[in-house]
Length: 123
Image 1 (cartoon, helix red, strand yellow):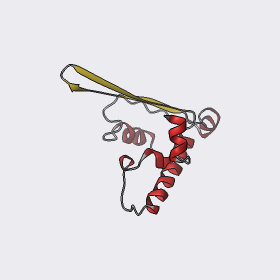
Image 2 (cartoon, rainbow, N blue to C red):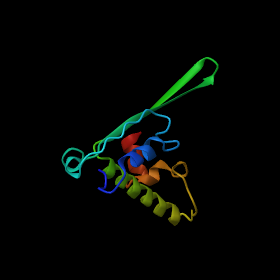
Image 3 (cartoon, rainbow, N blue to C red):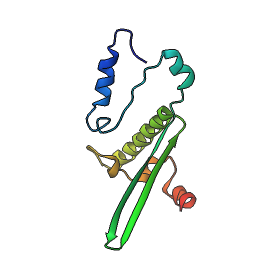
């Protein structure tokens, strides 16, 4: 959806040349009306795969795949924000303060379930 006074070509160019995001890919930008956005794209599904590979020794290659299939990207994002807020609260109660990345947060702190529940249900 494009504002009536926006320069469509300038917007397209800003997107396709965005460093480290779209600039390395063959990217097509399509503009749609507010009506089409509401009627055909309101759930905003999203997904993708990241595949990482490497060798632990000369003869052993390891591959890990991370996949994501979302019915609603906004709902997933909101859920993630709530989960990390929960984790920050738990960390603060333990005296942990300061800047953290997702790699600094224990996965169990993200869940509303207790550690005992997670072990019983997921292990």
